[in-house]
Image (cartoon, rainbow over all chains, first blue to last red; front, side, top):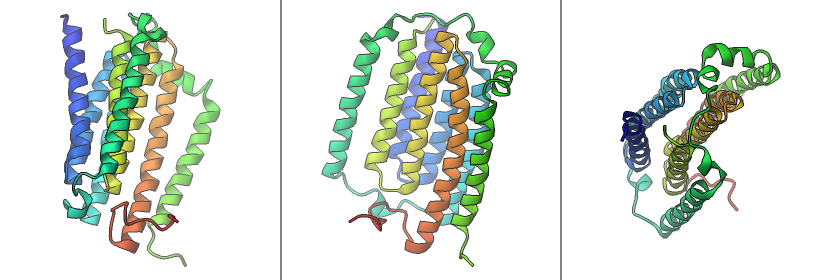
Length: 170
Length: 100
């Protein structure tokens, strides 16, 4: 086993275990912490795919900004481990887990026997397209319209969030 | 070199964990976090394809997905705060105003 494989298996196992811990913890604060850990593992996986820009953005935006927002809301609402939120296993949950297992088996079957099974090596261009320079050039030439559209969407989201969280409409 | 399949399989597993979280948990905030997990697993697929096909489009899409996720988290958490103010709970079984 090469060092690269060891590294990949370590990161993959870390990502899966932290994701499982996110959905099983009783206290939402613990879930947030494990979700941040999961984001760091994913950022490292992006680095193994030579996507430096996406890896940094992942840590800055997701682990930095979005998770702080989650943490802030949980602490604001003062949610402890509430009894009725984490109750016993119901038949609905068993059905949900069964269906999810069937789903993942199907996807793994497609992944294992589909066309992607032949792709063994990374493209030589992968090193170039992950850099900030390349992505910046693409974003402000070919993707200029989506960038502008998304900035409008962000403004709408900010206004919407303030309106929703405001105490009263006057 | 790690084949593309390994990344796709990992991403499928992470996505399914997110789906299980959405379907089984009753706390609205943890449901939200599971949605973030699902978004992230799709991002991993996009970056993997981008690297293996040598095409930057996948990484552009990831950039936009992250932006949308930030907007969605802001709006979603604002909705949760508004709901909590009205019903004093984040249990999604008790928030059934639109259920007939």
